[in-house]
Image (tube, rainbow, N blue to C red; front, top):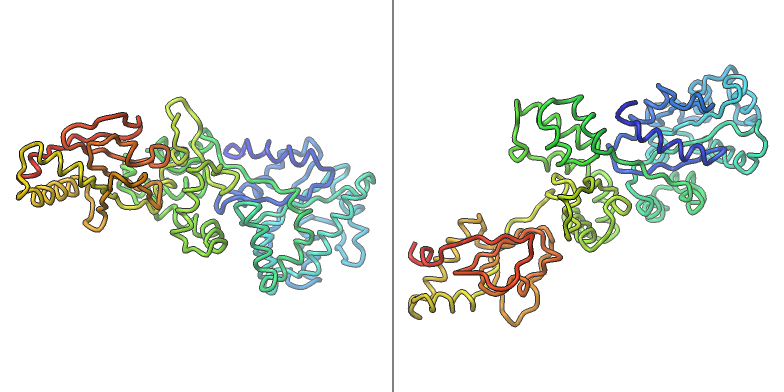
Length: 440
């Protein structure tokens, strides 16, 4: 399991800490959860530590819709010599001992939440509830090593614990299966494990299985999100030799991942649409929220050249630029008019000169007419809804007076003649010939 080597160590820390594990796995969609637990069963990396893994995808066992079918499927997955009977679960430790002497068996229930929500099509709720309750009873009696045989790993689609709990409470009437089998939610979430992203080394290894070009660029754009790495790598392969990532629509790769769970969850919680939900998330991150723990979003590995006061720059570029807003032009009309007049523009020509200057700057930065705003010197810092908004400021005042350097991540100052006062290091100054603009 070369790509998931760190994940094997991550899981062992949780397995080793619990005589009978009952773990709830959260993490973003397409983060490799299913692939990892399938490979875990195939390679059995902890067999030398007397732990055996088994895997059950609850969405691919339609026979488990009935009680008899459920126990029959479970018997086959565990490879037991005798069928498990719902009224004789006390026989399970003996059957496991015969099949796996002196070993603990850990069963992964993949798509655990989806199967319960759609239990009519996938799983018998009574049987699943009985299995989980039996494991919980065994946890309480774990001093009896004969009973300490079967643990559970329940894999969900939820990015974070808050979203899991919030969803259960919000849907307690229309999703009775999920609430019922989850049981004591507060108890269950004490065993939550966040499925980790890939580190840079293993991200490269994954990308190399799909393409030999643009590996570093892909990893920088995607971070350690396996689903996104795979989607972008396939786009790169399709684009041909040595492609330019800026020419590939990465939003088509990012959008389906964010819109499966994260954005609908935040939108529902705050009564927003999904675009506004994304802006809310980014604003929260810019104010200091941790992208990984709060929103299950990957971050780039810290390095000396990434030291920045702007938290959003920790996000991989493809994620950070998803639904990026158009540039906004901020016109300090008083400053522009006074500078134009000082350079010889007559009052009669002032309006025309301002018009030409505005159009010249708009054309240079590809700013639409509806994205021009006036700024008054008596106003406070200019506020933008989205901290990623590329802002073009036309003024000769100190830039920090107009906009907040600790909030905005893309600001260009266009001085009519020269920019005075301190300018934040991450802002850019573009020399623009105002006199030429007035006569264009």
